[in-house]
Image 1: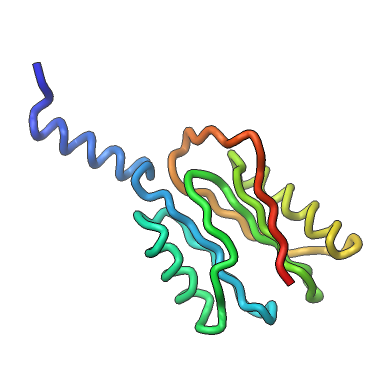
Image 2: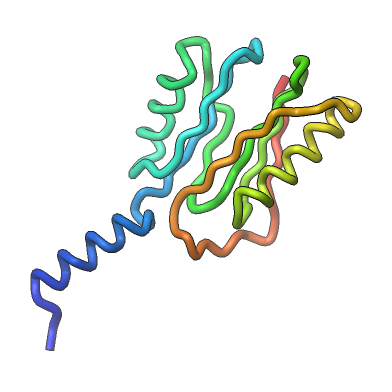
Length: 135
């Protein structure tokens, strides 16, 4: 017996709630190091990019894109290079990795780190993590 229309609608709603269909994220930064934004769970990458720029400001640019994963961005408290990374299963893993990389990039100085996860909660990460840095 095939599923009814009501059963199909319920399945679609469950998929939407789980985040499987809302999995685009973006990070925007101000090159002067004054502003940043990270957005998650948009239905398209274009929408995520637009929202990240809007939240960050007109002098910002997209620094990174991610989907179905956890990502983090880190920046030194006293100025310096931005770093970000994605491909993590949890916020804690993303925060720890980016904080470590940020401290390495700044000679051990403290960094601020922001992390977000998007997409499916049962995400299986790739075998590697992408690491990025910006000045």
